[in-house]
Image 1: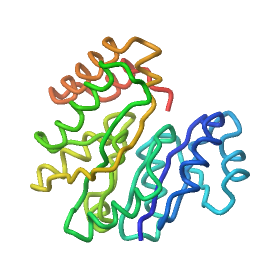
Image 2: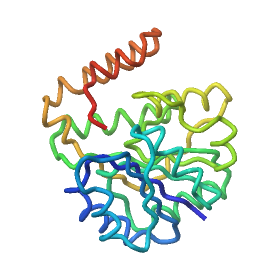
Image 3: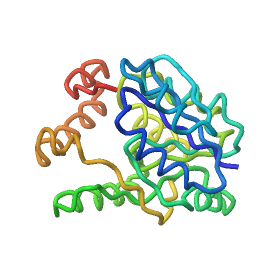
Length: 226
């Protein structure tokens, strides 16, 4: 079974669309993990999706994801962002990929912005999976349960936890498998600060992380509200 884990923080307005996405998923356990939102995210999630489990955990995508993983019953863990949309058979496709031997992987990224630059960003993300063996959370990371806990879960970091998790898997010689099922991710941050500026910022922050710049400094520059 696949356990779908979705960290939430101040996503009350996203609950209707998230409910529609998760409600049509086949063959999956769904766990929502609120990080102490200051709005009514947790209450709205429980009301809109009573058949799913809604937990609370200390704020932080890593902390919330790890809490959901600890509760999950599935032998495959599939982590989604609250603003991502997947196909109804996504969990089944992930489960089949793992059954075929994939230790971990992600989906095929696209953005909810038709601008050519965003299509290029999605293409570059897919190429990074294939060529560099690195995936990010907005691509819908999945992993075998045993492997996830063997690695200690996501590192408790304010940012880059998905990047570091990918790097740890890569150091073990484990390459990601990209499942050919689309995951549509919000481009809201690109629209807020400018498409090119946002892409350049993300590239710069990843380069800083590789150079050993403290992740707290990187998180402050990113200005993430999660």
